[in-house]
Structures are given as structure tokens and as C-alpha cells.
Length: 210
Picture 1 (cartoon, rainbow, N blue to C red):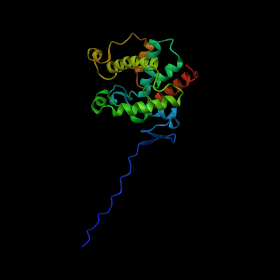
Picture 2 (tube, helix red, strand yellow):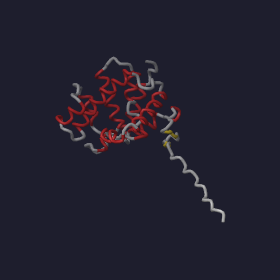
Picture 3 (spheres, rainbow, N blue to C red):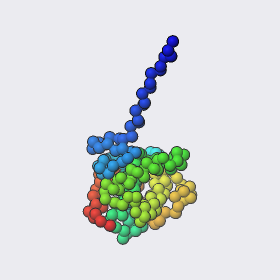
Picture 4 (cartoon, one colour):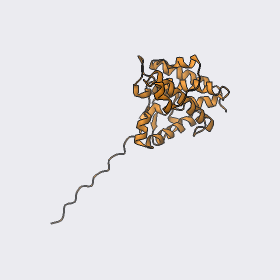
């Protein structure tokens, strides 16, 4: 008797790698296009992504949008003469999180480089969308890193339950900052965070060349 032939199994469809935005854009995480990126989508998403996994004080989450504005203000205090183009790049330093979320540093260490590679791809597309160097320029990257560490220290000690003794070895000694910057540590609603982020982006977009 002839042997029966098992039916050929069809290949499973590739997993979906894009997310639809409220603007109607579809952003492919594996191959993000600057043409699929809108600042409204970024602001909307970042205003609803919680820093510190939501483990912060206040009636509202402390959003990545508000954190980005804090980092921008600290960057201005650290380097008052830096160009507005550099400040715009600093404001967008965490913009990729509008689609991939804010993963806490301990978990990033657990999963390895896949998250950072995806984050870097999306951030590069965002920077190109808004006529900024991609990857981020050395000046902008260094300033963003310094300001981000200072912001993390302030958030940790004022919002996330860290003592100063606990925070210093992790985030370093913070620079002296004015009371205006400290006012940015009171969590806003998502609507307010989005509106303020968009307003600041518009201010920084007046200049188009470094």
C-alpha cells in the first residue's frame, strides 16, 4: 500500500511588528520610518507612560513627558548657551518610549540588548523626522545623559521613595538647581503633560539649523 503523505503545514504568519497610532500612522518597530512619526503621537504616548513603573507619589503618574521637560530644564541650567537644536534633541531623548514604554533599568539589565537596539532604531527615526542628527550628536547625547542622571536623582528622592544616601551611589551627586526646576517634580495630569510637551517642542522648533 502506498504510504500516506502528511499534509504540508502552512507557515505561521509573521508576528505583527507595528503599532497603530491615534493619528492613523502605523509605526514598524523593526524598520521604523520617519514618515510614520508625528509629534502629537509622541506627546500623547509619553504623557501616559509612567516613570518608575508608577511607583511614585501623587494623584497622577509621573510621566515620561514631564520627565522629558525636567531634563530639558536641567540641560538649560547646565549649559545655558547650548543651541535650541541641541535642546530639542535633549527633549526627545526618551521619545522612543511613546511606543515601547519605559522599562526600568533593572529589567533592561535582565533582558539584555534587544530593548536598547529597538529603542535606538526608533529614536534615530524620530530624530530624522525632526531634522536632527541621527544618531544623536555627541554634544546632545552627553548633555542629555548628565541632565537625565540629575533628573533621576531628583525623581528618586522626591517621588520614588529613595533616601539621599541610597540614591547618590546610583545616580551621582546632583548639581545645584533652582526652585523653578524643582517645581517640575509635582506630577501633572496626562492632558497637562501632553500640552506642555507640545508647547515646549514648538518653542524649540523655531530654529531649524544648529
